[in-house]
Length: 261
Image 1: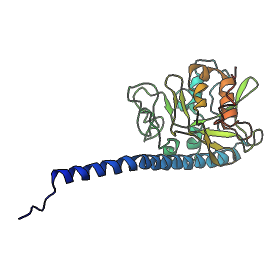
Image 2 (image 1 turned 30 degrees about the vertical axis):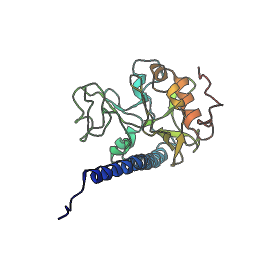
Image 3 (image 1 turned 90 degrees about the horizontal axis):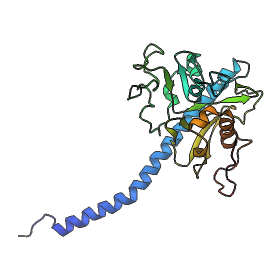
């Protein structure tokens, strides 16, 4: 009587076919997951942009100011580049969208593609440092141990105007101006890419677009200690990389990036 089971060779052939199919499907599945994360991130930033417009309507056309001080080289100015709450000051940047009620859920400030361990909603920094994610409870009552500021994976922007920072303005800057972006930059950890080919950006007209950066050009000027203490460097990155009317095509290798200093 013949056996109804598989032979060893048949089993190996089936395993080999499955391995080939997995090799074909995995890149497609990864690409689909990344696209879904990018789409969800764009939706987050569009909601932030619309909330920013609502905020500006109630504040003489001014979006939330993202900087604490007028002197970028001061010891506290770096917080303004990525923090949304600082214990000694209160809410700044897009954190004010929550504190003043135009956004009700701060989870919207975290990109689904985030890979930074210390930047998640409801989680303090795992190494016990002064910064961390937005707490699940009330701010400041439920901040993590030793947590003195809150960070998100999105950045909000202030304009350097003469000798001081000012909030982005719908009147002074127009709807083409970038208000927030999903680039996370830290002067100790550098730039965090959430998407492989560029950044989602929210604009002062309430919209959000994807800006391509295939050559990782933004890495050259964003995320170092110099970036956090040099207003011209920050201004250059926002204007040339993100603003609709002034940015050059980042994917053009022949164009290059001039030194902003």
